[in-house]
Structure formats: structure tokens, C-alpha cells
Length: 314
Image (cartoon, rainbow, N blue to C red; front, side, top):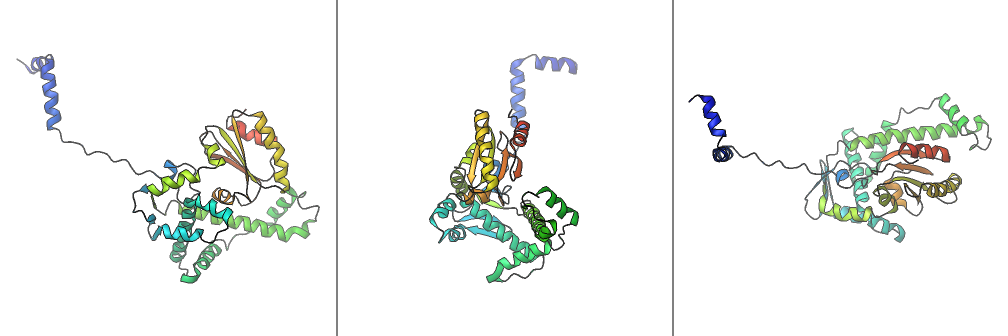
């Protein structure tokens, strides 16, 4: 019998096929089970992190330890001391946002470490001074051109109350320089997210995330609808001008759009979580809850609807 007929005889018999496969399985070395990579904060709780700890991994840590990273270890006592002697309205907000407190403590320590690496002396009782020196060093070459100052004046002439250019020139220059310095600092801080290599206590975070995400903004973002959030305050002239627009949008898109107003004076921690530095701010989130666009200042309704249309609200 040739090889071809032998093969045919083997595979023509189902019983032999079963025995053959079983033998292969028994003889083959077992492949090691593939362990799934630990989730990050952003993967497990989208939108919870305000930046630094988005990519931090979740892991089992001892009950007292909340975060570990090269050169950084934060425990519950470090967080608790930040909520001592805080006025009642703010203390409750902090209790519901302890992960935000953790992120700020971690950021401060990361900046101190960055200052040390930059050769800046860190004095134990004046560590914030080293952070100031770090930012001063990275923004020392920030400059504003005459053309930029003139352009800002031309675009905001109404806001200037008719004041001549020379009267407000110096103030505009300072404002633009400060704005640019903040952008440089923010870019540096954003870069720390990719280098901090932190691990967060997953059991503690699970408990804290339920509290932190229990607010109108995060609930709206997780609803499956497009969301427009206005961060503002009563008595703020451009904020007050936005209110009729928000009411109109609620009436116009009742089933496809969430419209949320956050009073920054009443929700200071939520405001800080979303990085609001001036008001009003309109933040647009797609149906997956991801921020798609942000605008600062008064925003006409036709412009708002243009952005909403890009997100599928028509």
C-alpha cells in the first residue's frame, strides 16, 4: 500500500481520526495562558481623569496606598490632609471627588520631581517655589508681537468700551503673554501623563469613581446622546446672553441633545476637573462622551448649531 492509500485509509475511519487528534492534543505542549494587560483609568472610567492619570494602570495595592510611581507614593493620609478645615459646601464636593484630589497631589509631586531633574533646588518647606521657578524657566522666552496685540484689539474693540489702542496696549500685551505662558505650562503638564508611569489602587478607585461621576455633566456624557455643557455664572454678561440660546437648543433638540449648565461658583471642583479657566465655556461631547470641541466666550446660536451638526445633531 502506498503512502497515499494509507492516508486515505486513516481519514476514511472517523474513530481513527478521533484517536489521532487526541494523541496530538496530549503530546502538544500546553501554551501558557495569556494574561490581559491591566486596564488604565481612562479605559475603566472614561472622563474621570482630568489629565495626568488617564494612562495610569489599575492594580491591587494595599488598602492604605492609593498611588505608586517612580519617585512618588501617595497614601490615604496625604489625601485626607487636603480636606481638613475646608468650608462645608466645598468639603462635600471634595469628598465626592477624592480621585481629583489624588490627581492634584500626584501632579504637584511630579512637578517637584521635574524641578529637581532640571537642577532647581527644592527646599522642603517651600516646595511650591521650585514649581514656580520651573514654570518661569520654561516660559521665559514667551513673547507677543505687535501684530498680535493689534489683532486682539481689533477683534475685541467692543469689549474695550471704545478705549483707544494705546490706552489698552500694555494690558492686552500682558493678557496675551499670560495666556501663552499658560499654554506652554499646560503642554508641559500634558506631557507628564505619558511619563509618570503610575499605578492606582483599583478597589479604592472603583468606590471613588461612583461618587465622582454622579453629576449632571458625566451623567449626560454617558447617556449615548450628544452633549453641550455651558460653564458659566449668573451676572456674567456673555453668560447671561448664552442662556436664551441654551433654552432654545433644549426646545429644538429635545430627543437628540443634552444641554447642561454648570454654575462655576457652585460647582468649583467639577469646574476644575474640566480645566475651566475663564467663562463662559461651551464644551461639546459626542455620543460616546468624548470631547469634540470647546469654545470660550459668547457663541452665537448659528455657530453652536454648526458644531452640533458635525456631531450628528440636525
